[in-house]
Length: 426
Image 1 (tube, rainbow, N blue to C red):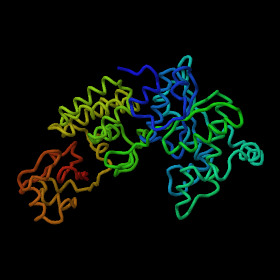
Image 2 (image 1 turned 45 degrees about the horizontal axis):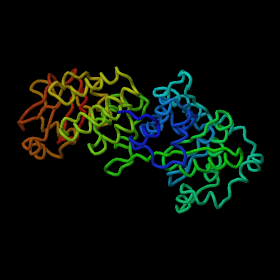
Image 3 (image 1 turned 135 degrees about the vertical axis):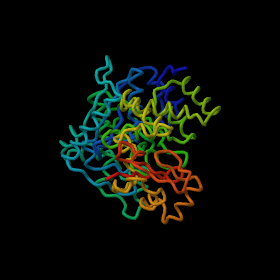
Image 4 (image 1 turned 180 degrees about the vertical axis):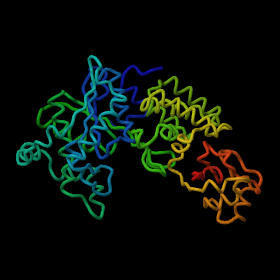
């Protein structure tokens, strides 16, 4: 079953954290323009940006006009929302380079040729870099009392920090409000969306439009995404998970979603895919019946990877996964192995050590520091905790030869369930 209006769609997906009065009626009655801002702090967006990207896409699919603002102007200031310290300020050239990468990624989910509601990308530098300070303070700043700004949560939290908040970041709220005003004037934009930490900035923009244009504008914020373990979504031991395939390979991107905790899968299917309510409910039921099959997590990984990297990338990722975690591990190519394990420790070993009868497995474990001594290595092997190329080593006297390597160039040695180490043959 699919929602008949976009607000109901957002509700069943769990995407409505807070909204201004009357948003549901406006969205049901009219097709309006709306926007979400994206921070150009890097040349690529990461998975934390997917929720707002998908929100814009959902709005467009329901006939509304979606605008993505890239903060070429506000990016020079930095948003204090959700931050405990001031961001490093970027130069104009850095921001312009970052914007080019972000535009390409937004095009993965937004249709810029749709009729009659094409998506738009707008750079707020178009007006903010031209602002005259005295005119801005006179015409806009006078509508913001210091008391009003201090009451905003993003400002109040920073004031509680030891370093406080600079005047630069303190002014961010006014600049974001001014963005909303400009979009209201230029595109009749009447709704701003974002994460729940943006609520104060969004309502400030609504207030400014009411004061200067006597207009009615709205806000809708979505929940901030965390994992069931209480960790910020998108953060891994290897760092951020990027949308740029040059920073996070499609295989690792796929694996990130495939490894989603069962407690989070249902929520993420609603947040990050276009699957309808009936399909997701069926996946929920399958997860309850047979969690070990991980069908819901597989659907999540497949759908999100397809959206960002395309069908071919899904096929390659699923092929590599089937080899990686099965008996056909050695059918992986050298390049696939190095891509899959590019963030795990590695050791170069002279190929001559594998000649003849090969290198003793215990010695290999010590060489790679997976064991501190041959005695510890022997205990690990006897305990069944050592694997070479995904095959358990049962004999502590076993030796490893080049014939067992992948492409004559690499081995993957694993200790226990998760501790992998790549051996590169010199």
